[in-house]
Image (cartoon, rainbow, N blue to C red; front, side):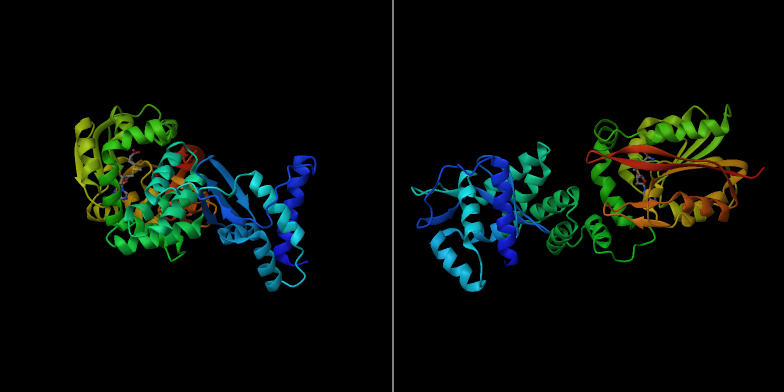
Length: 414
Ligand SMILES: C[S@@+](CC[C@H](N)C(=O)[O-])C[C@H]1O[C@@H](n2cnc3c(N)ncnc32)[C@H](O)[C@@H]1O
């Protein structure tokens, strides 16, 4: 039995078992032109095809042979014609398995019967259907529609971008990479997507997310940042980080503090009551504008973190914190070692990173970096800092999945 035939036969048998009997309505289809339902959007996968029916809202999973039959069913050939074609290609093919599948597929609406052919949906219809499905959380179906339509109408950068995003969400890396590559051909200045592509292509990761990428991302995100993080993504990092800090510093107050990657000031709010002087540093002018409006900070600098740290001459802080901002750095030595130089004796450093499995760190498909606890420990040691605590916690959610983080509290010797 040929490979193509085996998968179709398996499919037909499985369907028969599920149906519980072979007594299905017989459709006499052999001589009719096979016409694929024009409302089907098709997308190939690794070992299965997906077919989404825009009319019924049903998502079908097809094996490659079934998908081939469907692709060939453009109304120009009957099942009998198909039998002749396929048996000529694959000697010894047992047509019965194919015939069974076609019969079942009629019942599932994958083929249409004779009569006037319904007007197929336009590319625009399919694209807007994809957006609606995404809104409803039906991301796989949205992906199938978006891919189908984008391949037909490939000159719109925004559609490739959307395809890349939803392919990323459902974990189809190759599709995400291809879509982002097509997008970048049309929008070569997009630093965020260029950085994400570095990860998707498994190219060597840069030391940190490029400055232009951070600037672009947070210029776009700044106004909706707090609402999105706190209300949509269940952002917990500031709460978990301050709890860990308080366990270390106890009742200490009137501290000189530095908030690295302060953003809009979410963590400044936590630090303020214990601060004598609070300094915030961030690369994004838009995020700093929000931080300024909070009134929590005594000093705010728009600057890249490693650059800022290198320019400070003396140990001037009692506490240096980085809440969810070291996630944009690979090797943590580039930030922890120079920051340690700015701590007074007995001073504290505390930060969160995303927990990863790859030693010592990895640029993930999100464009952020993940780190291991052993990397954090090694870096602390190299920086001459003692580990007060290292723990794991939920930082927030991303596409419904938990993002687990590491909370580190380190201390300069007295
Ligand atoms: C996820 S936000 C966290 C903001 C804030 N700490 C909070 O917890 O809400 C990350 C922040 O780090 C900043 N950032 C990332 N890389 C940076 C760099 N190399 N230099 C300065 N700021 C950076 C971004 O601009 C952004 O505001």
